[in-house]
Length: 169
Image (cartoon, rainbow, N blue to C red; front, side, top):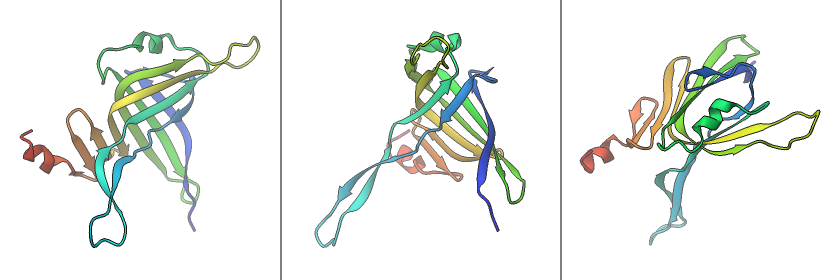
């Protein structure tokens, strides 16, 4: 009998700063392939042709404004902010804990202060557009995507190595 791994706790770090007790939620990036349909002569239906990686974003909300995040707004490089999510996922059937880590580099594209109402909870939301993404599971790299350097490493195989070589990179 098995039970799914459930997130038991997490931490978010921003350029090395620890947000202990500040972050309420983190929406980890959804990885999506850009595809287009193709149906050529003799085919009974369309197939999807892979055209690369779609944009990667990470969204997070805090209990209130963080001044350090505001100082990063409008940063001039596409990889100027580094965020690291560290999650502890536990299986209730075995009790084992897996360390799942997501590191992204990018820039904040949206910062929201939410509704201001006396005596009510505040929400400070941030959307970070990512140029780099790395997922590790118990210290082993599962997926690494570096959009600027044309790297897509999945399960130890760089799926863009041959294309980089073909175009002289």
